[in-house]
Every structure is written in structure tokens, then in C-alpha cells.
Length: 430
Image 1: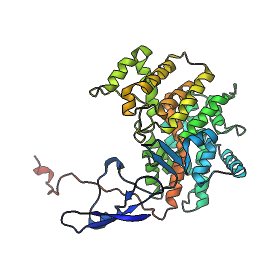
Image 2 (image 1 turned 90 degrees about the horizontal axis):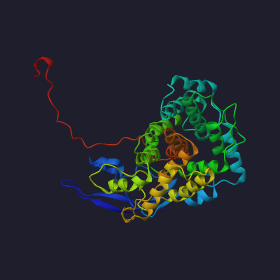
Image 3 (image 1 turned 135 degrees about the horizontal axis):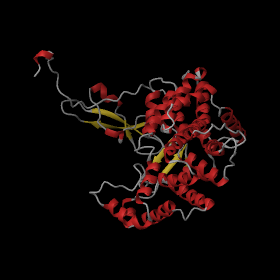
Image 4 (image 1 turned 135 degrees about the vertical axis):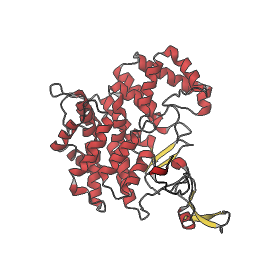
């Protein structure tokens, strides 16, 4: 809602009035959409000062360490809810009553299986393929199997696509892992909950069925819940941009997976484990802390600080407790890697340098440790992130398609190339 306006004065042009928009939370936003009519554009690399859309889904205040989903604090949801209930909340705007939740969970269970032809699609990948490559390909291929839900202007089709994606993503992820091992695929077991089912498909064998540890399953559900959505990040923005062209939902989510694959976005928890492995021993921590403080050293402590949160990541507080519960349940305190992680955490929470710079352990620090403890290989970490974030992506895609503001994304540029030149025939060029 525009309550006031700003005035832009530009040499050689009349003053331009720009509406100032007010959201329900967050800073004021200057609407610059009319500048193109005056042959002017803004320049904002990384879109750090640009709101590309309006949204009612998630709110973040990085300075205060606030993360809200549909108005509910993330810590409250993590303590009192579960992943599928948060999925319903994100998709529908309200928490479900018991009947609504039961129906939603039942619908998810109904769609967990993959088409058998799609299962054979995995055989086209080398066994040593990165599971994110497989995830991109298989999710994109879903559009070839579900022509009945590709009418993006049909709300019922959009809802069905959302259910299918949320339900099938754990099955696809577990299949990617099993395929890399040469083990047979394990089908979903609908008597299990969402997190239990994923762990079942990951670690069971036909000859040796696995019963998921309830502490591990609860931790897995927390990881899913804490990664369900995070406002207009790189992958969510990618999904919105792809969707603005009218692309089908499976193609859009595949695009989001590709964006998440980047190490600067979804690979942070994998980088934490790689860093801990490099440090190697508690006795070497002080050496690496000194390197992290040295401006001339390229080494950075992974899993500390956050681009958005200038305070403690609210998700990290929940994940920290879960991390300690998992290590207690598995009795792995003496594992060198985990001893190292705990010592590094202790130092970072007490060292004046880290406190002054607000380099607190973030959600990636703890989630990486949990996933490693569970026995999930590091190349699957980003896959699990993608599984969890699928509901956020499809919710934003759905919101965008229902918005009257929808336009195909078409950023402008600041051209710094050469001026127009005369073409010189090949035989005349030096």
C-alpha cells in the first residue's frame, strides 16, 4: 500500500514521483517500476536493495533474528508442529485442523510412488553421478508423466502438482542414493511418517528392513521443517523467474534445484564437514581460528554467520539442541569429527572476535553435523535441502501465478561494451 512518495531528481529531466510502499512488516519499499517509462533503470547487483515481488508467505528480519512463516515464529513451529503441517501452512496460509491435516497427510502418502518407467530413468546416469544431477533430471522428467496437471491457470492442477512434488521428492532422493551404491530401490512405506519414510528408503534393504530411530526421525523432520522456506533467496527467485514465463511446475522446481546446487547457496552444510575434515584435530583449532581472523588469508570458517541474519540465526537455536540430542542418542561424543565440531562451537560462542562480528554458528553448521552423524554422505546434503525447500518453491510459484502483478521476469542491464562498429570483411582484417 502506497502511503507517501519519494522524489527522484535527475539531471536534464523533470522530478519523478515514486510511490513508497508499506508492507505489514519490514522496511519501506520505493516503487521504481515506472522508471522505465522515463528511460531510466536502477542498478543493483545481487538484488540486495530490490523487491522483485510482494509476498504473504515468509518474513525475515536479519538484524533481529526473526523468521516467520505466515506469521508464526520458526521456533514455535519447530517446537510444536511438524514438517507436513508446516507444508500445509505454507501452501494454504493457515494451520490445518485435525481433519484437514489427516487429509493432507493421506494425500501426500497417496503420491509417494514413482511411475515404474521413471524408475528406469535412473539407469541412464553413471553410477558416480552427483545426486543433485540426478535430482535435476528426474524432477524435470516428471512433466513428461503428468500431462494431467500442467495447466498452470487451473488451481486444482497447481494443487495436485504441489502434492506430487512434496510426496515424490524423498522417493527420488533416496533412489539417487541407492543407485549410487548399486543397491535395489526401496519403495515407500505409507505406515511411516514423512521423515521415517525417507530414512526407511535410504537405509533399508530388502533382506534387512530398517526401523528408523525415533530420535533420528525427529531430527530429520526438524531439518526438513527448518529449511522449508526462506523468502526470496537465489533458488526461490529462480523458481519465480522460470515460472513467470509460464513454464510447468516440474521444470520450475528443477530450475530451483539447479540454483540450489551452487556452493554459495545450498552447499554450505557440506562445506562445514569439509572444513572440519581439513582442520582434522582439536589441537589445530587455534591455528585455523587465527587464519579466519587474518584478512590476508582466504580461509573462512564455514557454518558461521549468515548473509541475511546479523544476529543469531533463529533456526540454529533449534538445530543446536537437536544436534546434541542426536549425538546423545547415537553415543558419538568421542568421534573426533564431532568432538572437533563441539569445541569449535564452544570457542566461537565465547571468542570476542566472533561475538563482535556476530559470527554465530548457523543452521548449516548444525545440520551438517547431524546429517553426518546419521550416516548420510556429504554429496546428499544439498539433495536433502532441496527436498525440504520444495514446498517453499512450489508455494511461491503458486502465489506468483495467482498475483495480478504477474509479468514475465526481464531484468535490465548497465551496458559497458563497445559502441556500434563498422563490419570489416575477413580478408581486410589484420
